[in-house]
Length: 118
Image (cartoon, rainbow, N blue to C red; front, side, top):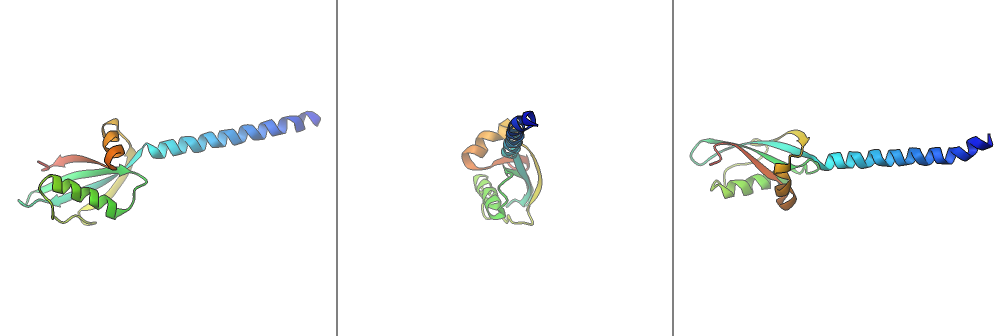
């Protein structure tokens, strides 16, 4: 019995350390995940632009996401085109790709151009 009482604190400390490691791994996984927002905007010439707005998965404020899209549209001389919930919807969460990491760290998002983004 005395032997068990001596080992019990060590056992409990071990369990606590494992729980902390699991929490850290979960936090790291979340930090390495991004949300993909599927976006279709009608250009001034009538063609439809298709691009994804990729942002940290923790960023769920649609006003912020739509602001990222509007900034992108301005950079493509398409400012003023409608971009709201109808044009831009949350699609899924995925792992962060190294290609996107620098832009996301620098400006908060990455734009993946897919169609008619010239």
